[in-house]
Length: 385
Image (cartoon, rainbow, N blue to C red; front, side):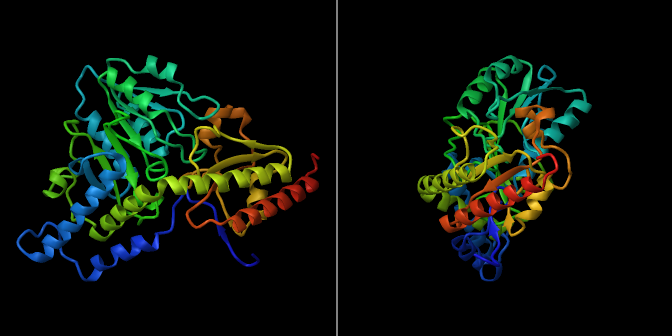
């Protein structure tokens, strides 16, 4: 496989599926109307495409089409969910709850709420990266307005017990928001069975286009509009709709719904092959997060006795990450690893592998060989060893 780069960073983004691209193409040049143009066929055809995509997105998560509002992506949806709930909350509900391993778009929004005087509670997670439910029960009180917990972590891939969290939140009369960016299309999500009131998702994590996502808003959930000034999206998010992106998002959701079970099994087998090969090739390999409750395409491991920067340089033709793409350039220890291992126990060389739809067994075997070779060489060069 000499000269070929291997992409194993599918948590950061995914390539657009060719079937998604084919669905999108006509809406750039042929069906180019503005969906808000209700007086002629150009607008009607565009609106038909938007509504078709809305049904496709809804079907993937067990929602109704009217509960789907299109956005630019999960970060926007997260921001809207938090602001939309807290701006409508009454004076008796001034508490918000989240977990210690959330995406920065959640944690930073909560930090702003704390600065504004809100009672912000950060619930710890266990060694596997799952929310401690006993701590959550104590945190979610009648004064709680919002509970926001991600469906699956973007670094260690841990999948949360959403149905349990949903029951706890519903019992307290609070709103339950889920950041589903990493999980939707990868593992089953049912907003009704899980008592989810708000759910964020994005196209580019599931082989759809960048710049298009959605927020599920359960019927009768009180939420302030994100953008005013137009009647688009029932007055909740003004602005001309991104028709090609929305069509692509819908088609990506349709494909995931049809192929999720088979893809889950295939990617899980590749992940297990990768882990077995790494552990057979070198000692001192530590898996971070639960293997039992994990995204099928995720593997996050640490290599003892190796510096992280040296390891990334040594495997230069393999695209992986040392953490979230949103903070990989900060140079700071991962807050996710700090939460599950302790701040003083975060390993230097921790790698996130994100296996994808196009990953092959041949590529996995090459990655095993390359990492094994590089880790052994770095350990031989280490003055400590």
